[in-house]
Length: 288
Figure 1: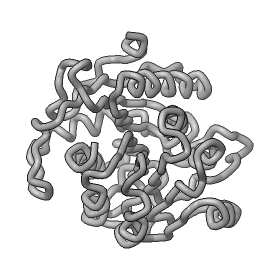
Figure 2 (figure 1 turned 90 degrees about the vertical axis):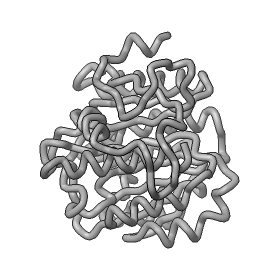
Figure 3 (figure 1 turned 135 degrees about the vertical axis):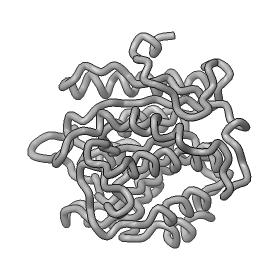
Figure 4 (figure 1 turned 45 degrees about the vertical axis):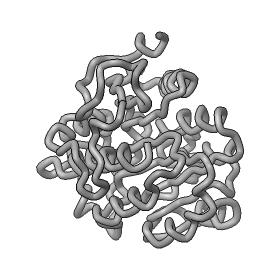
């Protein structure tokens, strides 16, 4: 297997199985934080999430479902050439491609948000213009460049807009960005400011029959709930709202997901990592 050559053993997420071939979902950690615009450290996010997951129950009282009912394999973290953005993105994309070709759902743990771009591109190659992207974030991430750099965690959704059907791109919880990003989004995509649950309910009828990719930036949550991130933005949603959003999507055709921007060095008592781990657990049990 090609991607096995690019992975290190970085621990396992709670209840992950030991047989890749038997799995339906594949967890991949991406320790990349080369383009973060404020505080670095998200390369340590995947392992912090895994470690925190061991403190959770396998059973979800919200859903009356158990992780033992699911088959997911945790590959560990990708080995990346630190500082080489383009080669790292190629490695991430190739990992996603192989997982998809094997008929499995990718679940990527960041790392900075730029890691989502090659994953979304590979998912789009498989599902085409019907693919819906649900983007939960404090920031628009729709810049064409950031300080002259096209590859940035501030440009990731703009990069995705170059190939996906923009009418199938939905942004939730947004509360920060430059005016040009909002103008682009209002013209081309679906932008919902500040809130998550009610806007998500409003589009459910349209997206429920389509393949869906979800990208979660942990900073969509208020820093009171998720301080462990590099670009905290006050005024965000609560953890309860985040779980409600996940449960709204229960049993929909979600074909892949990522959760990014957890930065444990800024995390008080590990509350961001345990929140991220629980978001992953509920996502696996809800729709993956």
